[in-house]
Length: 451
Ligand code: 4AD
Ligand code: MG
Image (cartoon, rainbow, N blue to C red; front, side, top):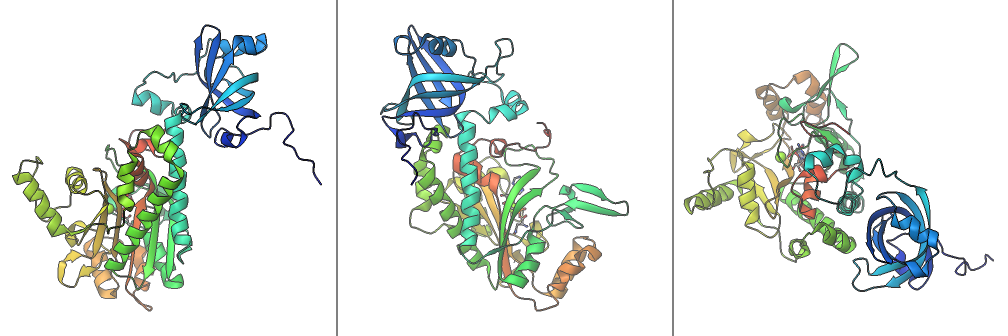
């Protein structure tokens, strides 16, 4: 029988787990995040990747070298600290650490201080130092929530009978418009493109497995500098056979509800660090359906808002919605709003026409609340061979590259639907962030590929 180790001096733990050690002496391994001194008292704030905790160091209570070492310690120096855990209702984590001892792992020299000081720094500077910026509590909280969103998203499909099938990243053809393709040479004769979406391939795996999803990086050579656009982002995409647009909207609703529920369960502290109003998220999962609007209804809403002077530009019937339009529509609801049946002319070649009005596509965009705009795009797919072939022609797409895709309509075609959700857009919305550049460890945008 192993001997009980609770008598061991100062077991190693993490700040996230510190509540399990109230009243005990523990060892934390991390960094000095901040330091305040007040006469014979030091208040270092330690971080270890799981959170931050304030230490108390009274000169009289610790060996002199401990006080002197901490007093002159440079921010972000790495260290191992031992101390007693004390509950403190005023502390953000609920606990403080009465420091007993400290060992410095690496002391940052005074001549080369950590570049990101706690005072406000400009976004360009922070992005240039993104490899360091991610250490700040707010950024760490965002990355933890991102991880939960990705895990919850995958889990939703894993536990609902979906098989994960991974589409290729190097592809011979476009999926979402040829102007946004990253092109590369593929051994001389052939061109390859970085995938814009796994959709076309998972339509094939759906015909093999029924309910499938893909989850991976996708690429758009979009020359847009908006707060919603990255050139490399992560997309999760389900594809389901014998599912129509209505079924797809219900799937999107259950999926988003699951994700928001998980984030609320696990990340109250992180949401607080970021400054997100959780009541906005609680409203999303309240038991009532997500609103569904047709494109025509959304258009009428925009015209009305323009008439009342609520928005500047008037939406032209037939046009896609621009960012300000989406922002207005979504800000009218506390839940994500599902806008369906857009004019086929502004949507992708593979979307099934509405039998009631073939000028419309059986598609849906899910617009997140609080003005975040589109986070999900999806549709029922064209399942007729001849129609799909004529669409490929009229969109000037290279027929040879789409032969395999046409085969899916030749050999046992069935109605099917799917959608794609951009993880970064979802993180920006759930965390309440200004810009998608903070939603991914190292954002790739039109004018940034460093670090
Ligand atoms: O609406 P999109 O272009 O749809 C597709 O790619 C479909 N093939 C998906 C499918 O039906 N399986 O993109 C889907 C989502 C958008 O709603 C948005 O969340 C995200 O991907 N997205 C981007 N996110 C960040 N930066 C960009 N440049 C994005 N472009 C799309
Ligand atoms: Mg879209």
